[in-house]
Amino acid sequence: MKCTLMHRELPVALLGVNDISGTVYRVDEIFHSEHLPLGSLGRTKKETAKNLNAWLSGRMIPASRSGFQQAMQTAMLQKNTEVSASILLLKCYGLSLSDQYWLNPAAAPLQWREINFYDNSFSDDVGNLLFGKIPGGDSLDLVSPCNTSDGWLRKKWKIADGQRILIKGGSGMAQQEPLNEVVASAVCRRLNIPHVDYSLLWEDGKPYSVCANMTSDQQDLVSAYALYTSAEKPGVISAFDHFLARCKALGIPGARKFLSQMIVLDFLLCNQDRHMGNFGAIRDAVTLEWQGMAPIYDSGTSLWFDLYASQINANADAAAKPFCTTHNQQLQLVADDLDWLDLSALDGLEDEVFSLFQQAHFGEPARAEVLSRAVTQRCKLLSQFVS
Image 1 (cartoon, one colour):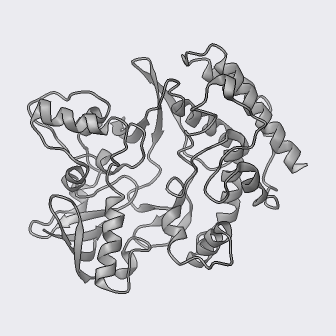
Image 2 (cartoon, one colour):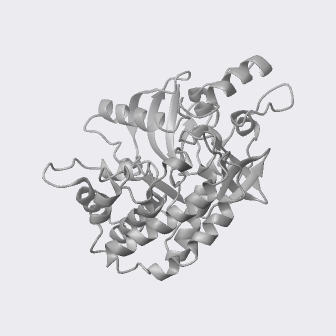
Image 3 (cartoon, one colour):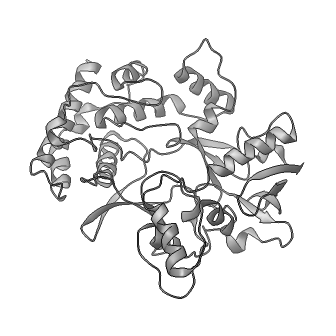
């Protein structure tokens, strides 16, 4: 089928899209190349089609998403409805709550103001399916921003009191990731680090993190990966320096301080998975002006979430991403950029962390105490590094 790639109300390119797989197989015409997703413009239309196909595939729910395979089976068995990642993408026209791109059917064009998820309601059916709940009624309404959410943890979008919120679960026995998000919010507040604020929701005895959407209907969240790959990295410079160079070339303000803050936070929390898909920058979708780095979000894979309490060693260096393989190495990258850091703001953090984790039922009586002490030890290690 023919679709127009749209950026809000602006037609960007006319595409050939497979109506089953969601594959972009051809670019017929480009109307506004500057509004293409960052890094997708190729030297030829064929190369651009390949790049856009990869970009669109990245908007689909990954097959590794917790509960997704079960959700597809439930939809087929209980509702006689075929569901796949590509079907879900096309059902919502590729619309997202992270940016303003979408696919407009050329044969029956739609209006942005009538279908975007910022101003219009959406179904809870997909979110309920992803959380293992069978929606009522004989059929499923598959129009939802849940269809274009990435990541492997169970998550869903919901409208509460007129606000778009994201609810995200945990993994394993401890289900610790949602609590880690709340701890990360607490650390960011203390250190005045711009961040998405997370709160805790308990449902059926399980914790979930809750946060409001970070973008408005005139903003794009652009991933660090898109920034990093927007130009080829010269072999003579590090990944860290290349990222900063790309931010400077694009005109993104505040990148160096942001990286310093993010790396410090991840050091304190021993974040294992700060990859280039879970941080980025905010851009005005109309003017294309860069507004700055996005507030820090998605810090759940932290605080030894996948280890037993007896295995936690706060003094040990730990694996890190995205610029170095360990947190100690990564901290060295920002050693000269810590003038913003007020370590005294972390006083009393141990009690706050303990109070939070004490709510959880980890199956390990001492886990809350071990985790809160471990955070305090990470603060001490950071203090030693600074001094």
